[in-house]
Length: 99
Image (cartoon, rainbow, N blue to C red; front, top):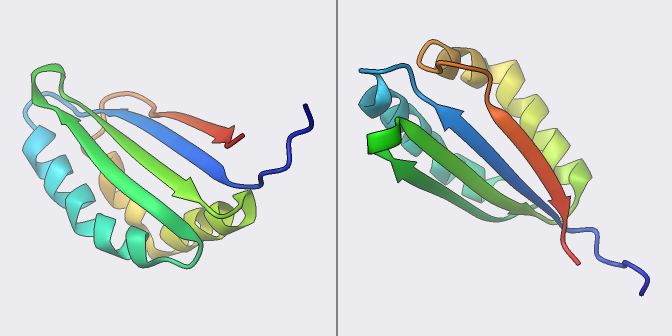
């Protein structure tokens, strides 16, 4: 079966530094409306697990190019740097092509 879809799913797992989960959640929740409104974003969700100090960002993009443009925009604004002060370990960032 030949794959034809260009849509990209993104799953980012983030572990907050103990005691900073609420602050990190607030920062990321504030970013979500902009993510959803960004050109090429089909879906964006924030999943929370306070007991594990963990959150998952799940996004679907029209293409990997749209998702890359979004990441560049966020980096240029300093949004990732602002979040990094609350993140305990390197986030796990995975992308998948939607079939």
